[in-house]
Image 1 (cartoon, rainbow, N blue to C red):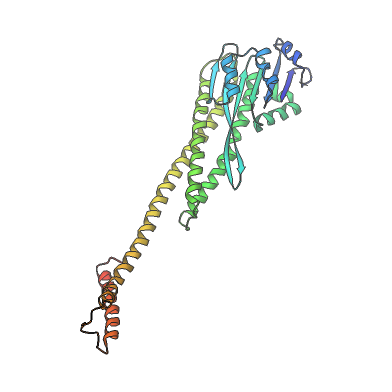
Image 2: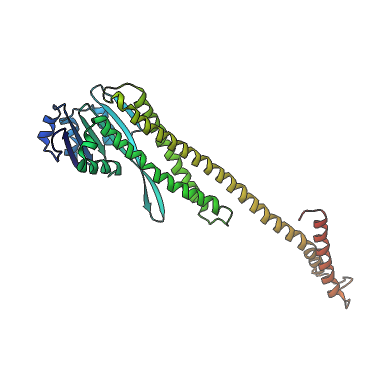
Amino acid sequence: MLTSFFFKKGAELATNLPRERLFSLLGEKSGLLWIDLEAPTEFESDSLVEIFNFHPLAIEDCITDQSHPKVDDYEEYLFLVVHALALKQNGKHKELRTTELDIFVGENYVVTFHQEPLSCTTQVRDLALKKPATAMGEGSDMLVHQILDHLVDNYLPVLGDYDVRIDALERDMFRHASKDFLQTLLRIKQDVFDLRRIIGPQRDTLYSLTRNPSRFIKQKHLMYFRDIYDHLFRIHGMAETYHENLNNILQVYFSYSSFRLNEVLKRLTVLATVTMPPVIIASIYGMNFKHMPELQWPFGYSFALTLCVLSSVGMFLWMKLKKWI
């Protein structure tokens, strides 16, 4: 789906422009053109070449949808690769999904390219329809700022969800953890690792964008991009904290599991040791020899049972005396 907006001060917002009109609007330096490509068809993707003549490497990054966060300066425009985060329900579990967002920033145009619907572009599109001067009246750099700002703000609900789930793991760890406790823990740990893998380079991308001079981002607007960088810096710190907490939970869980196993082995050892004398006595008196001293003795059965009980009690008291139990 290709959605287009053109805003010029003193004029109404133009939307859903025909393809032939888009090329002519690139020459109007006083206006701002925004094209949002959401899950585009091959015909719509061709506009990246036919209208804007973007570099083949940048177009390849858009099509393959496998790039790491980065910013490239192609002299005539900036090319940004960032990622949006979302939690999708997959059966009983929530699954972390990342969606790549590619942004081309020129002097009087912005092109956004993504294969799945994104809340950040949807929010800015809605704002452009309601308040076009607010969304697009300050130039291409501020339009990109609003998209990135919404994208980063949408990280917080995702992190908040993981915060709740990690707290639940900490509470349930000593409450006879269920069989899928370790599986859940490792799944969340992998998700947090993916968070760090995405947020870290994205933070560096925003840092590079705010520190390296560019004619596509006005000097007076750099502070807004630094604010996004500050948010990403804090979010990355939260992800690092979650990763450390999960490592600690994993270590404690293994230690606790080993402790419980040792307790079980200890009880089994005590049981085996206490019952060992009666087993020996019973095995001796169970031998089929004809001439055994107590075989014809009237009190032999009672004597054997008493001997079994006394030997077990004696073994138990001896282990208590040695403080083994």
